[in-house]
View (cartoon, one colour):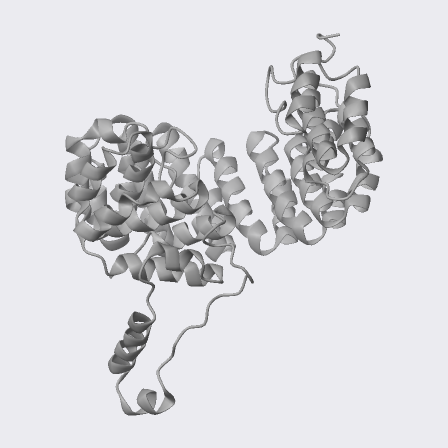
Length: 459
């Protein structure tokens, strides 16, 4: 049984779903293995059956059982086992219980439940999602991807016959499934895993943005196993779709064989090389950021080079922020903005004092302001008043107000009386924002334009 949605779902859940995955002791639950005598006397198939029988005997009877299990991987596996053995009618009954779960636990259970339901009765799963209100919009991408993973042809037919159901996919932070793309992109990616020729033929029947995204997904999947063939396909595309396809190929090829990818990139028209090279460098940086840094010198100044610099600094500073900072200092000022953000965020999480020392040594300007914002967000142990003073030094008003709001919130959590006194006397925080901070105990009052939109204008 294929479950292609398991790995992306598990990554999401371990990263932030809490509840189910934040076990009491943080260790995975123990698993039952067949006895040695059985393993040596039976075939591997019989051994697998024995292991399955053991898991069946220990399988949770309900979500309530699973919620109290220690260990994040154990909970995910228990949920998978639980849903794996339910028929569509039982899955519908379990879906009705999701509303009773805390939102973080509901996210995980929904992904796993609807992913499984899509493999057994996708039409019933889709019909049920129509009854879920706004929540159904977030279930549909999971259902579509689960369906496409086992029956892409009929998933594609349903998508073509019901386009409005998927119109929001890819338009928001939760609107594109785990792939983050449109419905056509999700179907094409799944289909290309098993039959790239059929996926390509279907993608070519589409129009507009759906066609571009589906073709790019096919190229992306092909580039993982056959980059040369992916290049041939991408060459038939036009405009931004071809650029995006080349970037996907460069990223995948660069992670496997950077020298080959680099040689191919140099064969592209000059105006297409830098975007592809930035993607290849990003993949190389994940393996060897110092080697990746040497490849940037050959790129022309511009957005692609700046993006590549940011990628290198982000990866390098996780391992050695001082070395990453020294290298960044040799780059142009224009390239330093985003890279400074990545550098300071990673450095402050590792070493507050070292990051602060570097920050205060930088000249005033946009790069320092970017670094200051990242430091305010990421520091763990600096004196709250000093952090507030740093936030107030940011030049651009909207950025300054946002950073001041974060600093105030952090300070209110550790020493509310001192924070309230400082906030009350501040000439940087607007009266409206002061009131929100005072009344909210440091929760709220910052974020974007207007939230702290007083500052100099409000005095």
